[in-house]
Image 1 (cartoon, rainbow, N blue to C red):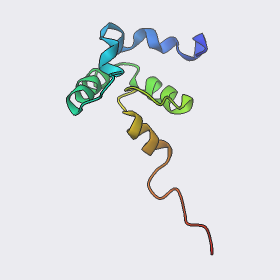
Image 2 (image 1 turned 30 degrees about the horizontal axis):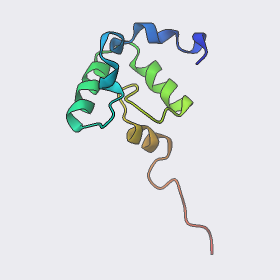
Image 3 (image 1 turned 90 degrees about the vertical axis):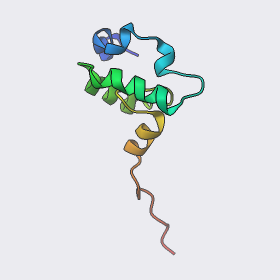
Length: 85
């Protein structure tokens, strides 16, 4: 990560939280909800989300999105079309 690209990180609400909340070994719905609650009150949630989507972050909660939610955001339903026959 280039320092100028992530200067927003220092203002993140997650900075004072346990990193395991955002990067658990075995995510649960409760853990995801708690992490997302921190993100919901964050002043840099949009910067965080944009970074994670641009960088292709594959792990953890970033910008209030799980890895699966980020994948769906990058590749929305129906983005693949069957090959022409």
